[in-house]
Length: 311
Image 1: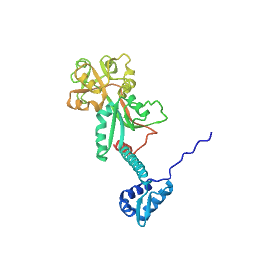
Image 2 (image 1 turned 60 degrees about the vertical axis):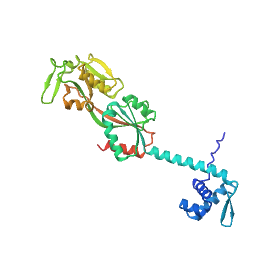
Image 3 (image 1 turned 90 degrees about the vertical axis):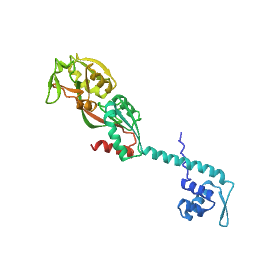
Image 4 (image 1 turned 45 degrees about the horizontal axis):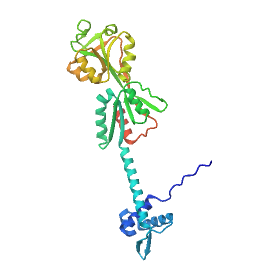
């Protein structure tokens, strides 16, 4: 069966705008002034519209234009069409200044805020929505086209890798840390005064209670792959969704923690918490930018990318 061809309208928005202006002002000369068009262009647009509609809209009496009975119903429809086109135009302008940013928890809480400040400085009228969750949840939102761009800690594992773009962004380091003068370390760990940290072997750490992030977080992914695989008998006493909760529990000396350096830098600087270096363990990791290939890369999207890659 032959597919019916779609009929495209031949009436233009310009013709409708000219007609509405003539209807409101009562003459082509005043309409040309209101629309900043020549009088001949206004007259031509009105003639073209009447030809398209195959009906007169005004009766010409000398130099005067009197409204034809057809004019009012066409005027009502033309006003509605022009109103809808303006709404669509405003929607485009609104969307051009809007961005949905996803971030995994550590980045969202500790690294994203100054980046957003830079974005607002460059684009004061930016409309920014943020979604902060663990890496798997954020990447799932990218998969569903709900997020324009995401900043995540763990290696992205999208459902469909063919449609997801990912780019290495930054390098971050996780740190094992403890409360200063922790009861868990007093009789076990040597304190390095030069580097201001405790030093443990992997075997010693395996005997101590460790507080870690929940499965699905980028931080936990690195802990599993680069730390816990070396200590299968480790005493992981708790998996916790919030980094702040881990910090407070370590401060209460419930156990040791392992988080990004960005999360604990203030507490390390104040001396409330101290780093615990584990011999032979490298906890560095890559942070990633992730976006869906089908997502429109608007001007604000590009501005944000420029901020992220200029550091």
